[in-house]
Picture (tube, rainbow, N blue to C red):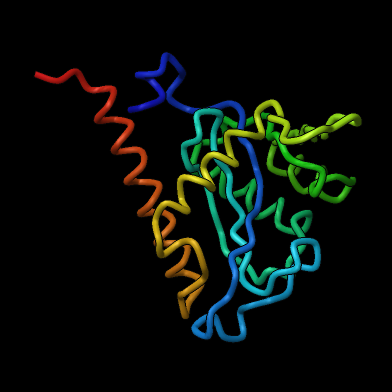
Length: 179
């Protein structure tokens, strides 16, 4: 297991939650919604990774879905996949508010909002948050995941699972001592 090889416990105690909007294609059909913040029409991928970037949970919604509303569903999936071991989730400012915090707390997860520095100049790496952004970037190396080409949301989610499995296999191969 990659977590043990990295000197970590088998189950994570922290997660990072975020979402990404994928542009729609004609195959997306009615599922495609409009994300006003990113000015894109498409589907939104809600993702949870551990602090090493390993996939814990994901689900697909129309892009018009609010991140705060999806926190409960994502927190429940995280706890189901980790055996209730996650206590803390790092999130961006899109997850602020009492409703999101309550939804996560109902599943035993406290949300910690990582904010941008006030005097931001250029690109800034945010503590813990860069891990999920790296995971999104890794997924975009799989051509099929750059845009929403799928007719069904379940197919899009499954293709992301396959991509993350490939990424974990690559990490495992690098950790395995060679001949």
